[in-house]
Amino acid sequence: MKLHLSARPPFSFSAVADSHGWRQLAPFSGDADGLSYIARLSTGRVTELHLAAAPDGALVECADPVTGDEQVEIATMAGWMLGLDQDLSAFYAAAQNEPKLAHVAERAQGRLLRSATLFEDVVKTILTTNTTWSGTIRMVQALVDLFGDSLSTDPVRRAFPLPKSIAQADVETLRQEARLGYRAPYVLELARRVDSGALDLEALKTAELPTDELRKRLRAIKGVGPYAVANLLMLLGHYDAIPIDSWALTLVSKEWHGGAAIGPAEVKAAFAHWGQFKGLAYWFWSWSDTG
Image 1 (cartoon, rainbow, N blue to C red):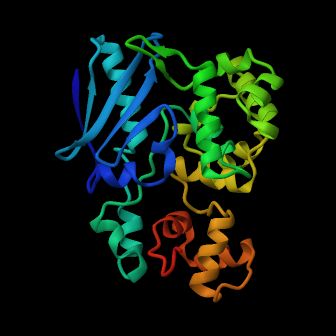
Image 2 (cartoon, rainbow, N blue to C red; image 1 turned 90 degrees about the horizontal axis):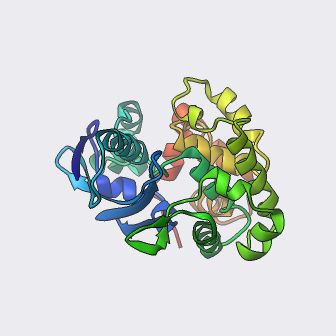
């Protein structure tokens, strides 16, 4: 099966794939030229999707025969992951007179690679906190290996776990076998709330809610602090917050404070005038020194 999906222009597949580190996290693999994603469809089928650039959009290939409904689901999934329908024209207009952002429209930057579900993105975001990137990669891979459904043609490769699969585990399994550490109870509670229906995360993907309301709902999830909330808001297309971590402090300090120690207030002040685009301006800023 091959699907050609159109995107709202300008669009660059490589810009989305390279927008942040998600492509390095299971069940993604590949690079900016082409991504593979092991997907579990609502029918229960586990299949490998190959995502690549195509004229005016993206190409999605699947070696398995799929039904018409599954094809629609795959197209919707890929469209969400790549942000094909996102309109970034207002950001480009705001950035056109800023030399540090002059490249964004030309390179069609601004879309951020997303997972198939918001549940997956929330779990992955929790697993980025207070750890190294290699630690995040390891923890995500462990969850997939322990609880994900296998690809029939290659059982070693698995989809991201359903909330139900994680919900049936216990804290010690997540802490010891998946080595999630202090994050284990947070991930377990999230999975159980989503599995029980107490929390409908996927509805937030299309909910027309103001940023403050979205922030409130995300902040209510245990383990999701200010950094994680800002990161998730960005993935949901709300850019008026900056995911401030130690790297953000380092970048802003070198750019405007001569390397002196700063706090979150200085990061916020540096991009305050960008209003609803603060997050994007920070994310795609052409930093003078990234060493």
